[in-house]
Every structure is written in C-alpha cells, then in structure tokens.
Length: 389
Image (cartoon, rainbow, N blue to C red):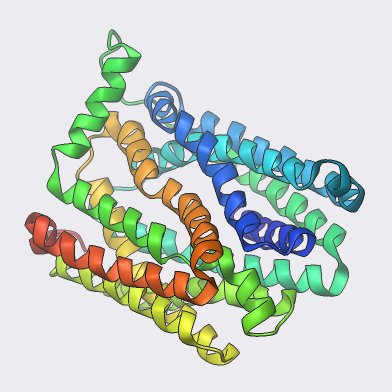
C-alpha cells in the first residue's frame, strides 16, 4: 500500500505541475487531503477504540484502491477535463484518500501495538519503519520512471495493481479483539479523554509538537517537481529519485538502528535528529547540483528516521491499550496533517517569497523550533527509553 501511495504522490504531483506550471497548485494537493483528514481525525480515533481495527484497516484500504481506479480513469481525459474544471477532479479524489487515511492511521497504529509484545516495541518500531521506507524508496522511483518511460496510464495501472494486492494482506491478517473500555462513555467524553491524556504528558506532547512543526516548516517534498524542473533540470525520472532519496536514507539508518536501538539518551538524540533534518533542508535549497541535492535528501532521511523510531516507541510505551486509537488520532493531527499542511505552506511560501528563499526559511524555522522545544520540554530532552531492547 505504501508503495502504491508513494507512486501515486509522484504521478499526481508531476501531472498537476505539468498542467498548471504553478508551485501553489502543488501545495493545494496537500491541502485537499489535509482538510478532510483534520475534520474526521479525532472521530476516527474514537472509532478505532470501539470497533475491530482489522476491519477498519481493510475498509479504508479498499477506498484507496477505488481512488486509484478513479485517477486512472481521469488520466485518459485529463487534458480535456482541465479546460473545463481545472485540476479540481484530482483534488477531489485526493480529498477522499484524506478521509480514508484519517481512519486508517489510528486503527493501524493501535493494531500494531496489540500484536507486538511490549518488550519488542523499540525493535518493532524500527522494523516497521524499515519496511515502510523500503516501499517509500521504491515507490517514488518507480512512479517517476514508469511515468517517464511508459506514460501516465501505465503508472496509474501499477498504482491500482499494488494497492489491490495490499488488500490480500490486510484481509488475511489475524483479527484481535477490541480492548475493554467504558461502554457508557459518550463520544465527546471519549474524545476529550484522549486529548487530555496527550496534553497532560510532556513527553508525548513535546515529541508530537516537535515533529509537527519540523515537518510543517521543513518539508520540501511538495516543491520537488519545481526543483527537478527549474533548478536541477531533470525530468520525472529525476523527480522519482529525488522523492525516493529521503526514504533511502531512512532505510539505511533503520538497518543500523534495528541492531542498535536509540534507547539511551533518547530525548537528546530526538532533538539533534530533528535539528539535523532542518539543516539538510537549508543546504538542499542552496544546492544547484543534482547529486549534492540527492545526497542532502538522503541525509535528511537518515535524521528523520531516528526521530520516527523514537517517537513511535514513545507512542507505544506511554499509551494504554484502550486509548491507543484516540491517542494515535491526536498524534495524527500533529504529525499526519503536518505533511499536507506543510505542502500547502511550502507552495504558499514559494509563491510569496520565491522558491529557494521559502525553503531556506522553512529549514531555519525547523532549527529554531528544535531549540525552543529543548528549552520548554525538559522532560522530553532528558527522556530515555529504558528496559527496551
């Protein structure tokens, strides 16, 4: 599923930019997914704590397949459709995937914590991140290469095929019961309980906020089609490699962390990792060389993976079973939406400030936020993941 989603992201991004030649239109792709995601995210967490999580995962994955089929259909007449309604049909399909992702994420996060023993949480987070990033490496590269050499129709057919294949794995995975909870608890009480739990825990709140603002300001992924076309002068093939570079770095780092989990001085490592990510984004914006830019994106992925694994372990360790869906939904508001809102922010900033200054500004803001978090969240900075090997 990750492979298919990453392919689709590259294909739609290049398709939209090829039609509009407007960086702001790329930002609107993220916004079209973020708005419906934000509207239903908290409710999705409540649902994940009320119903079997495997069923939720399977249903939402089916929505992804249907969306991919619609995008394939639209690709055959998009040039004519664009003359009538612009790229609104593409944004509409992406909006439905935003709703699906809002329900998928808390259910998947809670389901993973149920089937993995507690003493393996750190290793589980590492291997889960490794598998995800392997798909995230190959997906963008495949999307760009297939689009460039075989055309948009062949690329979307592959998206449909791989997203459909994922359903086989979701439907055949084992089912686990929903953890016991207060059945008389109303929906608003249920949601507020999850929110209060997160905001009362400085470690959880600090880790979520650090990632949210880091991704919000430091993400340059949405603007990669512009960098590939106008700065680095490469086509969709080069864009695929640029999109895959952060995930490639993340896989490399995950292989190391799988055998050496960051359980000592975890808080300090988290702060330095997000700061290093921001620095890589600044230097990426200033680079005009394809290979240097590729290397900086790889390095940013290595830093990002350290923070991903530490945050994933924190989320699993500090959350009771009966609240995992709601806490994951709050986490998704901080982290999941920050990717799409970051895409919108990047597109808007690029229109106002210019391409390169906007990305330098975003990376600088990430570094400043890291410094502020290390001061105002001392428990996070001093946190260690103890007893987990």
